[in-house]
Image 1 (cartoon, one colour):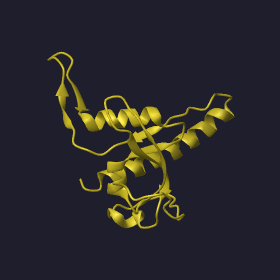
Image 2: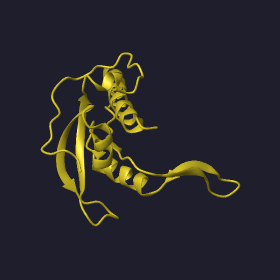
Image 3: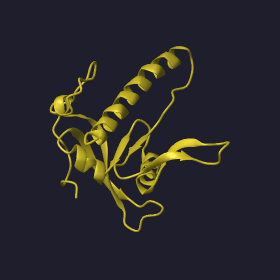
Image 4: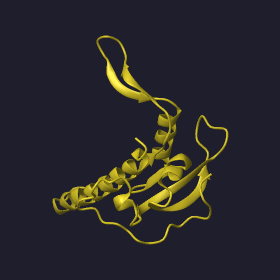
Length: 148
């Protein structure tokens, strides 16, 4: 799916909005807020049932999955951290702030990362999928350089 990276970013934004609503309910009941950070990477994966005949689980594996997990670990509460490959796929459709490159386990070079804060107006019609109930942010794309 050529628009899968943008769909992943939309899903992450929806997750954070839903979690915020859920946390309001929790707080009204005297419970603590739940906090998550999200990491998104784009790349080839191997998908399938893995394990023994008794413990088969459908999963994805590969370098792209490992990088996404590392980005997730890098993300602070309520952040959506995306890789350069995801940024290239979503360029012009997301409002994001470039962050200081991060060194992650298994990579010799630091990874270029961005924190997504919203979607541009163009992203609402980019995939042809209606975005029912989704707020669109119109602030300009903020980064020091185009992803490479």
